[in-house]
Length: 121
Image (cartoon, one colour):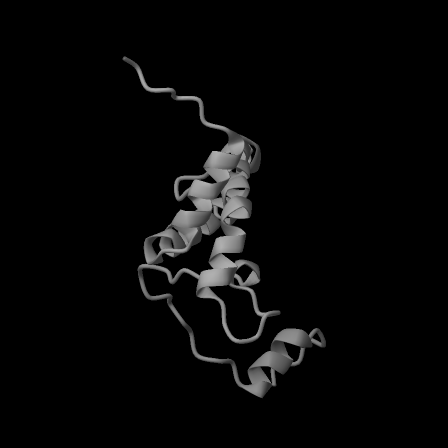
């Protein structure tokens, strides 16, 4: 005999809420956030990356919306206005970023006001 496989949208929402209340659910939520706001690493801006990944990003946002209440209630802080679902998720780059030294004031002024008088000094 086959089991009844009819699952309502409410059943799915309850399951996602239960998942959101676990540490693994919070990690999944952060991964969805990265998908919703990120670009694929092999993206070429000229090929309409935003259009090409719209469905994937939209689906991630829909799942996040279903999980938000569970995230807020189980991973929240004492302040009820500080909701984890409203905080940005930040991911560190894998490699260190190249940093150049800060330009001195005189170097910045020269860049802003180039000498167009023809004087060499």
